Length: 391
Image: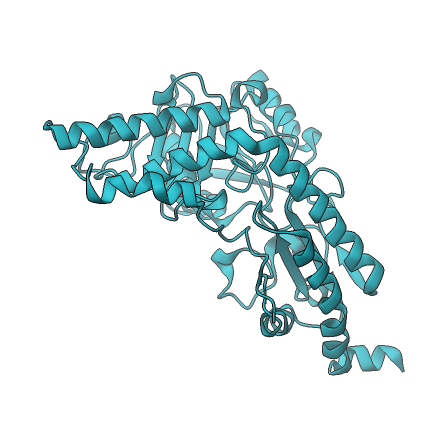
């Protein structure tokens, strides 16, 4: 039996060169980077190199615009709650979308319930796209920030970030984007896009888990959400995760070097997988935008079957996939993203997300195309809904 990993949207395999770069900071340069002795200075030097590597990947102007965090969710929380609390005297209205990751939605809900903020949750069309016109209409006199994700973690739709950021700038609104699924997997240039804040996470592009970063354009004030240390220029207290940060920096360097080739390969495999599924299985719904989507994202709903049964059946064939975000895998509710695109609860429950990385090969795509139709047919034969439909 083959072993095929197609859940790279949840996490990716750590690149061997990343592990190699991290090793000395476990065994040799293991000092606390806040210490003044040589061990500490060596660790700090590695951290500042990583800061430059991340800066270069997203084309930030200044390495000090990069704040290291524990990952995408913390970066989102620091951006949204940190900015809202530091600027609440200017206004208490925030704009986001209905299909954001919970790392954005939950901080917004917190600000609404506990801090008296007002949040507008923009709708999306059937492809998961936010309309720039709806965004412009939502901006009010008291709007201080907007947060719209770059590439959706479930259905892969890539938003018109440049246009949204420009509309924000025209009205004096600070613009944040959750780019956790995008950075390292597609070109991201904060200068060209006009972004004010951006969240990223190392383990989505072959770095280690438990480390990420928040880009904050110079001049933007944040209220720190972790207190007890002066690290990251008083913006994020806590001893640095030195080895993780080194790994993030190396992963950023690797991603920047081979990004065009990586995007071309993954997009080609993605399109072959989409075509193979559509040609061999009926009664399916393609989710997300056809062209404006993350290079490695494939998402379908299969009518008359449950996504959980489909995942378990695929696992028995050695195929690792998901039904949506790994952060909500314990929930029995259908995806809020799929519901926002207009799908019914019944159809949304039959979702499957296959996500590719640079380590996937064409023979793995062929294997899925070969095995998936039989699995779907077998599950449908056991489905009362499918049987009643055929009568």
